[in-house]
Image (cartoon, rainbow, N blue to C red; front, top):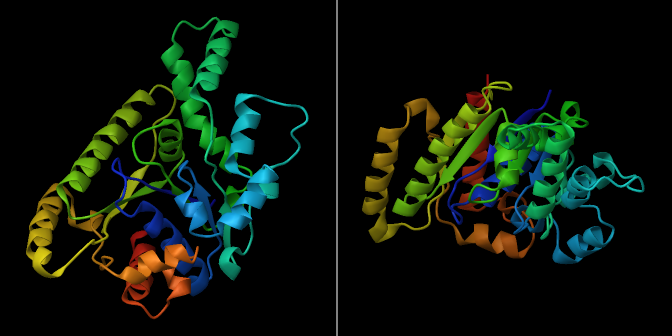
Length: 294
């Protein structure tokens, strides 16, 4: 079974997508792993970090995005014939073993989800709507991944900031989660909120089956240096006091403008500018990532 990992933080702009696509690329390119990137964020940052807007537009026109699979569950249609295998883009960025299930700017309609689950509750004569919702939340992403999970070493999901249905379902379907963070107060708040949310998520699913998800580690993605470095060190010290040493990656990602430039090229920095400090840092981080797995 492939290892499923969520990259998540309650706050946006902390480097979730940057971490997801560069880690996935390094695993495939440098270590020969078969990796699927799943974009669960309607901002489609992971998708556009691995394919051009032109290619995405063509893909979306053919309905070959995650939305197709979500629609098939929320509004079943006998004419929907495509499977997850039909939607996955192989050898993305010309890297053998690196594959992408594209996201979409319109992933699902929350009202239609509520309507579907309300109908199920009536059909099952269920009085506990929360239980119906929790079960759907638990299996949604899990059921989407089940047909392909054995085909990959890793499935890495780029989750949306906040705590919407897909983020919760992605976490519930995961074996581990990665917590990217910038050494800034609001990023730290996002980390604390996430830890509380995951604890509550586990509690809400105890009746069905205990969630078996673990924190793989906190990854610092720095957004500056120089005069700010002392301040950054103070914030990072606070984080180290909140987490066990084995939950903190020793390798961090330095401030490197080439990481942002690579996004403009619609590819990870480890491919676009492999000699840059950011790319080298991701290569070292990936090696550490592999040592953390059992």
